Length: 207
Image 1 (cartoon, helix red, strand yellow):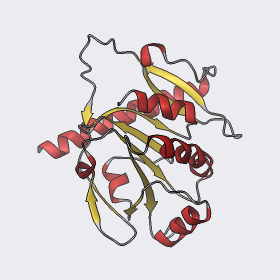
Image 2 (image 1 turned 60 degrees about the horizontal axis):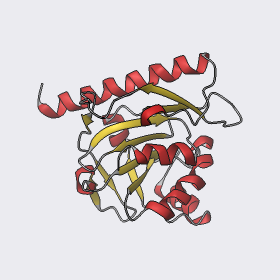
Image 3 (image 1 turned 135 degrees about the horizontal axis):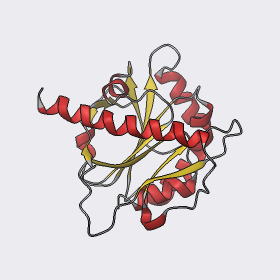
């Protein structure tokens, strides 16, 4: 097994653990979204049909401890609307927020305004990658662009053509948000829509 496959395997394990935790959280009592003791890693899920955000603390790492759970994100390629390709490593150097979304996905649409508001404030210091899951059937670049234009969003939008990036990272649920530090390590992530408070707390963990 080569190094890239090992990295993808490790990231898949992390995401699988997150998904399993979300499933457990959906069956347990709701946790208030402001519970971030010691800026712990956080995940969210939306089991509420009214799109109520639920925050769940999954682990705590003290400042003097080495977090061995960090995984370097495997390199993958996305494109802009014109078809120019970019590797995720092209964006290293700043903290990175990756959001996989689709215009047909109600939770994705619901969280977009808050992502936009945070981007307008922090976009100079944090790299936002709003990655559209462009399968070419249910979602096309034209549909995605029409949605972005209609809502006057100005954050950077990229396209995951034929879901190559999503599948390589084993991202099967939308929206999914990953928070990477400036060196490309996955610090935390969320499956399901998140609100501005949780988005900002995730960003605080990678700055």
